[in-house]
Length: 303
Image 1: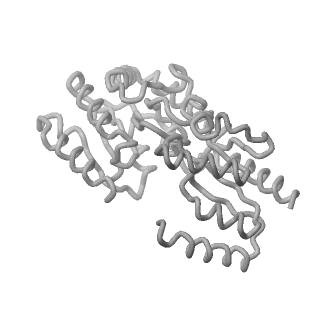
Image 2 (image 1 turned 120 degrees about the vertical axis):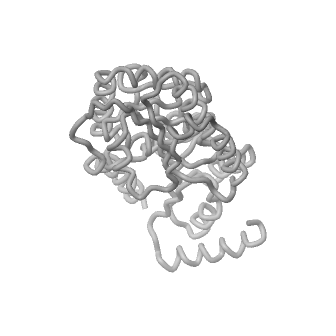
Image 3 (image 1 turned 30 degrees about the vertical axis):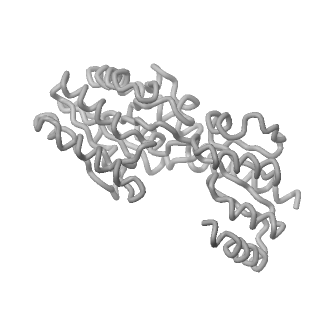
């Protein structure tokens, strides 16, 4: 990264100048090369901040860049703002809160099914920040109390965290066979909508997020959501009214919420219907795209 830094910035600057872009949009905190290149090419910059966690060094560099370059910033949620931007004294005209979207037209279901077997699913990477270990703890705790639940995990590990993936699989493979057969790791799935359609509850155990699109997709499919209180979830899920918000890592609280929903189809329906309304009003891609359009227009008018 350090060795090729000057060369890559030089290439980017020439590329931006050649294309004569009006605006450079940088997605994610660590993309410092693009930020420098945009400024050196004298191009207007919009920096999108999408998560609520970074190592201290990355956080320090980000704050330094914001002070030096004064970019336009789009942040996803209040939690993202508190982590990255609080105390930076950024002009209100230079910051915009826009959540990540979902397609409510695609992610929709017509009917609820009253099944004897309750399917609980999640869509996530098998990495530390997603806290797959807590997901397993929740599943184990619930399955010890209830025989009619099944857990499905769509997602895979990464090369950078292969050790964590192996540890999760070791825990999984060491489970009592009666418990293990009720927990299924699906790997990567090409049809998330189908998985959500066959599910009754959505469980999300992540430690940090900006705007968890997987949660928005589940809400759009009228699934009751049990999630940790991270990212934008407290802004779009009312605890006990449209879903359940739990403390990060508190597998007992999460499992109790799952148990409660599994026994009450009417509560599942209420949460699901209310969640769908939230998505239609605030999180649909058409609504979010209009917000982005307004930002682009406001920046372009000043050029």
